[in-house]
Image (cartoon, rainbow, N blue to C red):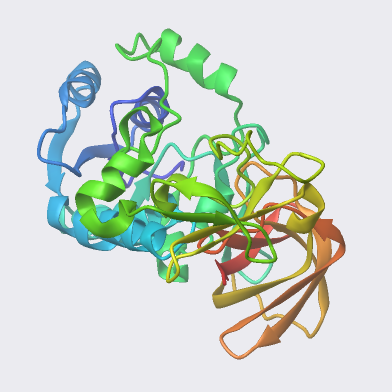
Length: 348
């Protein structure tokens, strides 16, 4: 960003967004820092310290109601329906790059920069595309599949070419007060990763007990609520007292919310060759061909799998060359060609 413009920075108080603010300040951009209030008790001390250190105009953007309605409640409803939700993708679309872009524009900004490890690349036809972050261990492109093109056009990702170590080095060089602050791996509204307690508060009937059954419907045990289980899970089944079988390890194959059943089976029963997606969203002006070759990620931490995509109405099917495991309703099938993020949809 070499020309002098007014640019908003999504300043969370973490090291990544702080370095983004410092880099833009160094480039002599006119910077306004925006910090989201997502919950009533949010602490803005770190963000305020960074803004003061860099001499930035700083505003708190209240998104408490929108965050609860568009992220937290769908998260709870998804778990209650037996799915494995992906709240960060919803938050990016509706809050971070929805509410926050509106706030940036209201403050006269011509762009919004964030600390995401992803790259915005302008293609040959002048259309902004999304690509994986250069540091593949930190790449966050998977969570951006649901963005609209207008959002991508407005966004900038200054850390997309960097590694985390380089970002830390820059934070120290700029004397940022959060240079040594550690990042959290938890979902922001789920402290210590305790999903079940959060869902139970948002949806009190979600932790009703039920049966753990095998693929034939035989009852093998009891559970304390389907919200404690997700596809591919092995721990916490408490089936060590099984009698009359080979006692091979069992995994959660599916969750039946209507019957309040957790269905378990052997590891090989997790394998799928086809995955159905709904509401597929294409980015960067990409127009899909019939049965074109793709690499698809079905979970954020999984390696992409080779396959083909077949459009079906607003959704489609991913057909893989080799079986894939851990396919869970509510997660996303995110489609790439090389480093370029083409789009994605929700797994049904």
